[in-house]
Amino acid sequence: MGDVLAGFHAVWEFDTDSVLIRFERGIRTPKLLQVLGERRVPYEAIAAAEAAPGRRGTVVLRAVPRPGADPLVDAADGRLKEGCDPYRLVLPAEHEPLAHHYAERIRSALGPRAGEPAERHLVTAPVPPLSFKAYDGKASFDGRAVAFRWFWTGASSAKWKAGDQRFPIEELTGVEWRPADASHSLGGHLRLVRRARDGRRPEPADQDPASVVFGRGYGLIHESLPLAAAVLAAVRAGAPAVPAGAVPGARPDPGGIAERIRHLGELHDAGLLTDAEFSSKKAELLAEL
Image (cartoon, rainbow, N blue to C red; front, side, top):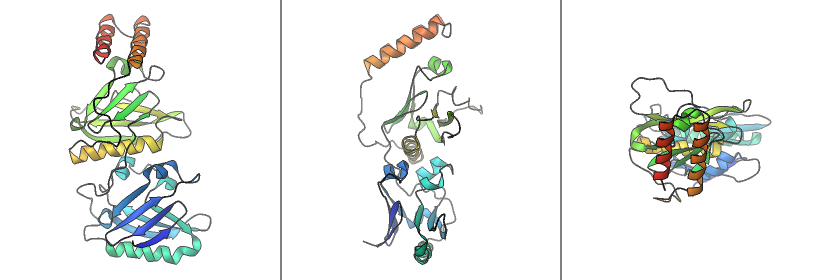
């Protein structure tokens, strides 16, 4: 066991080749950090380290990950708030000398390529949930493909016409994750970046069948971001990954399919689906049984 430095929401344990970051469980610890549990970060994955005064009598020790080294950081793309930053350790101000000591210790362990982007992920992706609820559908990842199943209460007619979606990992080049803005009921999304787009600009997320839209209480950060990171890690690795608890070949819920057929009928009655579109989508759903 290496040296241990305990902060307000996490404990960092320093080994010869890595830092083990363990996040505390507690009412004041952000839910994302609680879900992450612990992460081992090789010094090879770190670009820099610094210690600086924080807010309200604290000092902050922060490691800066190399671009491309951590799928969670890559998926977040700089959009995480400070409190959810897994590379940030907040300490009481009286521990400032310790913070500077360990920042220097990390810097001394960095390799000659610390300032360059990593060629592969060096930090393991978090274990994602099997699925999460967005505003307009449920997103799930079985390690081999991402699936979107639309909710009739939130999905646009464009998504209903396109039908439920399934995207194998080999058809993707990345993900685009945007958290919902707390000042708006909607605004965030998870979009899958597909290979063959012929230079076309993507549709707005609420119209794009390769996206699910977030909102208040939908697409929560601690659910949607780990799933986005796991998908990105699988895409970059070029191989499927099986999340814990995945059930290969699970059969769809007949009651759910019946509900979706009923809603298709409502869209058809309202003139939003043609007779041919209604028949085609209904046949697709019945084929899942």
